[in-house]
Image (cartoon, rainbow, N blue to C red; front, side, top):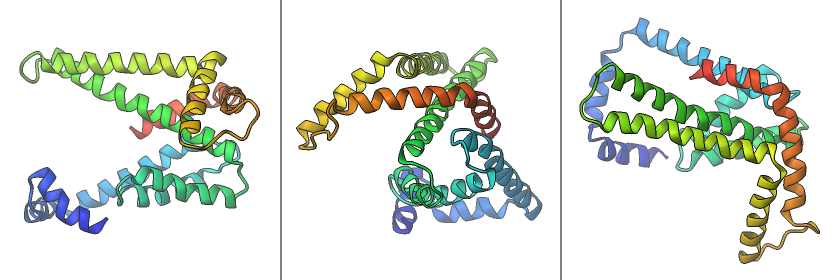
Length: 220
């Protein structure tokens, strides 16, 4: 991770480390302290969403998971998966089931991806209306982001509220697994498990969607 960062970042960004250092020198200690406090406050606010998606998880433990997962995911390639694996180990130590963890990962990432589509779409549309920027590209990008968000919400709604959507996805997973030589162990394949998982996740969202939304928006 260190080698990739040291060698790759200047090539990708076009900024040498000397330029990065000079930019950091321009940040005064009070501003650095303020940024640190804002960062920590954002992580703590985010625990509202994380704890809501995992009944029984305290905010202090959610804060710990946020730090430990980010410490891994921000430093290595494909770090998101590695950070989730680190958190999986802790969840098992704390007595949470694998199904609860999978539901937690699904729900938090659904909201996270939705925000990543919503905020740029709103921001680009706002800039276009305000006359900031040049050419029609800004409008196209903003509208495109909002259309992607609408499609994303529609697919998520179908998967979580309609049994047929989850089963169709599970049947596709069955076919892929068999092609890879991993025949499902359940009699009905992954479809039976997907139906049960969908019901459990939908039940969770009936009580968790408000704090999930509040926590994710506050963090953003």
